Amino acid sequence: MMGENAEIELTAELLLHAYANGIFPMAEGAESDEIYWFDPEMRGQLPIKTLHVPRRLRKTLRRAPYDIRINTAFDQVIRACAEKRPDRPESWINEKIIAAFCDLHRLGFAHSVEVWDRGEDRLVGGVYGLALGAAFFGESMFSRVRDASKIALVHLTARLWAGGYELFDTQFVNEHLEQFGVYEIPREEYKARLAKALQKPCVFYSEISSAGSGGSSSDTPSPVPSAPEITTFAESAVVSAFLQSISQTSKT
Image (cartoon, rainbow, N blue to C red; front, top):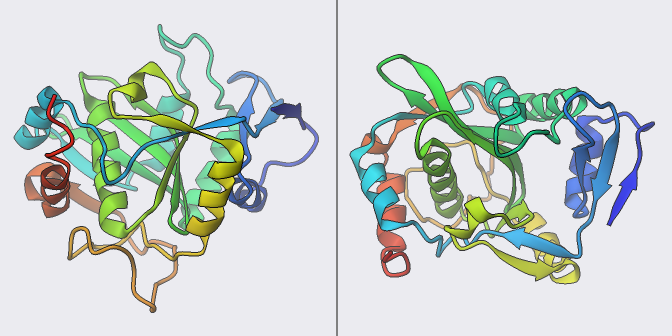
């Protein structure tokens, strides 16, 4: 379902309300000011606890060829995701969406997982999205070197797994996500799962000392991050534990 609503100002508050009700915006194009709101009949989802990670990608993850940083370059990530590329001549991310999500990032709700070339200190891939309760809404990803966006996605899922998140929304299903086990559920089932997930407090931005601990404590801190977080696959017990946890479901 799609409806145009170009006159309403796209604010962080409006986005939080929309996502909490299962609705999300997309622009007609990167240069367009028009925003459309979507509430699709079928909703794409990634399985957090049983993500399928292909064998070759597992090997890449264990080699840890890149630095992984969290929330250190959100603006760069969303703008890289908005760039046109050969497989996508037009982007659905315009300046209104960029501005509103950057506001959400400053408020501590929107997050980026970034892949950096450690030799050149250059951003080569990443993914960004919005966290509410135990739900994470994956928005877009990009890659400038082989597997960079895939590495970011696995690292993101590992963080959701360790933080006790229950819902990883991808909005739609595409060929890129099929290798990770993406699936669809009807709108009503999605909204029921979403409503349940919103009742559970989770902290995306935190030092996770116990991988797979299943959630946050009763003294959950504010979602506003205090400082950028930097980690690497080589140093990340969370990613290692996550890969081990899904080893029985990701054989190929």
